[in-house]
Length: 208
Image (tube, rainbow, N blue to C red; front, side, top):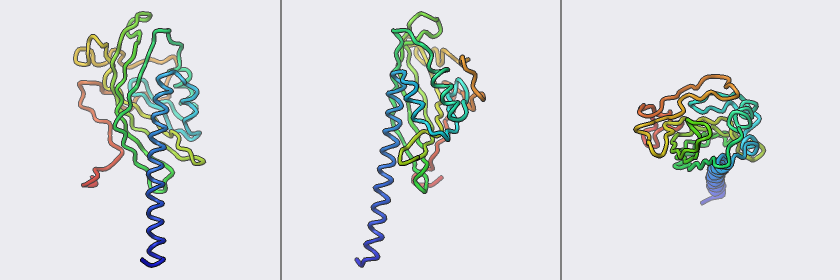
């Protein structure tokens, strides 16, 4: 192997290391977000979003635009006072991260199974709940740090533990927040709908 070939090989290896590191940092960002969400650390969540944030959308609630929209959602719509018995735990699984050419933006898809103790649909009455949905998010790299650029969550069921999703697919339906969204949801089709949140990536073999 001559010097030119060696330099090319080193460049290829450096690119692979950067890509692997970027993917791991994005996965770490998503995991940290989940822990903050579980513990109502709303300001910490907002600080994970870029100043160039495009939007935050939760499918049964609506679209909040920009970094200010992220603040409105997490600090005022999502971040309402909760009773002592309230609880939420989000298990984020099967992350698929795709870093765009150039290494400054990326997309990620995650499945989420969550358990909570909520007062839906009867205020003041605690009830064990199951939920499931899919994230399709976008990320941006700023000053060496990966941050959220767009967060999208489509919830497919939110059901009382003792009912199950077959009997009660979504006990809340479309929620009216204390802070109105900028736009209505782009898609909200809970179970038994066969709706599939569009994949951000192409088939790894066929390229389709």
